[in-house]
Length: 297
Image (cartoon, rainbow, N blue to C red; front, side, top):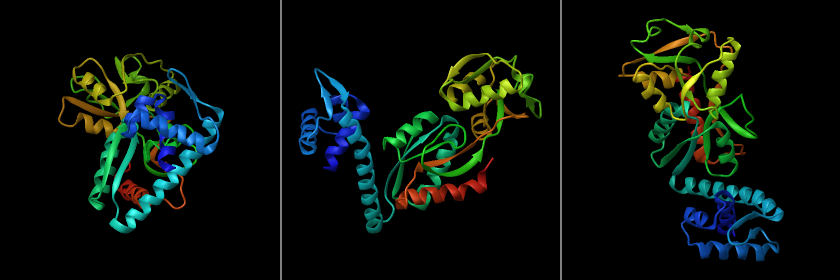
């Protein structure tokens, strides 16, 4: 039954029989047969079928909610029993906002030193998508903003509060300053994260509070693209301090603190709320608590 519920979850995620089968590592006929057997067992139609996937029926939508809960409980039970037998093992799927990727590396490195049987799959994504991925059981935890957009019922560990830095070429007129203000940056040639990123929305609000209307001539969802653009000269960007310091190290760029931020936000680890957490997630949360006091910005 658990395997068939996982088929339903995969189909709802992929919205395509072929892709769902590929994600599960099975053939499409096996997936179709499994969904049909689940429908026969429950006595209701779950999937609208035609020449292609037509969506879930209302009964299918309700079954999906319960399937995620049952599969999640099953995975937690399996992980807990495995931890008792073998110690902490398994892969943690971690979704991370782009500006927190240096912290993801720090957290993963600390965790794997303490627990060598644990591995990580780290994916860069938006804060909004992290919530969706958690709800859909596609990730186990996320690094995201804790106090700006709704997260739902989750467990959290704060890692740091963002402080913002200007990143510019070392020959830029602002490079020699001890600090700059948001008002200083309004006339600059900006390259920034794309508007779907929460960090960009926070930056926009800080500009608005300073009475500035910024113009970004280059936008990207990658901090690496922003740093590479700045290194060419002629552009500047704005990043949280930890990411800014990492990206300027050993390069012809500098990071200058921005004074007077009207808005800053807490960033931390989020996991689905559980009582108790699985041993692996409990260890991950403890590791996050351990590194926060030493490295908080």
